[in-house]
Amino acid sequence: MNEVEIKSSVASAMGAKVSVTGPSRGLYLIVGRSAAIENLVRSAVGSVILRLDGKKLLATLTFAGYLALRGDAEVAHIGPVTVDIKRLANVSQSLSRVAGPCQRGSD
Image (tube, rainbow, N blue to C red):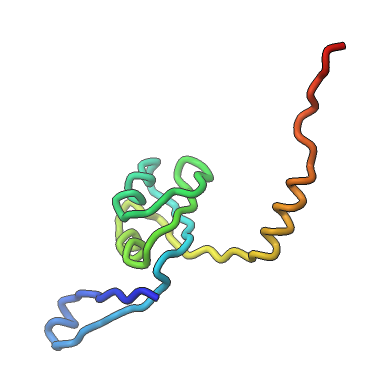
């Protein structure tokens, strides 16, 4: 787990310390307001795993990176993605059995 301190004027005025704990690294669905979302992910020390379309992608981020992007005006939505490992393994196994494109031999 990764603990991140949240700074706010209200907490400071009251002499409080606010900490949030999350995973050290996670997988997130990010929807940007523009196609430049990849640059934001990289600036938050994240890695793009899969681009779904011009404004949507899956990325890995630290918890601090997630919190930073969550407050960014260029991010329309960001949320954690949970992967069912058993289902993913079954899909992967099924896909590995599928034959590739037919190759023509010399007739």
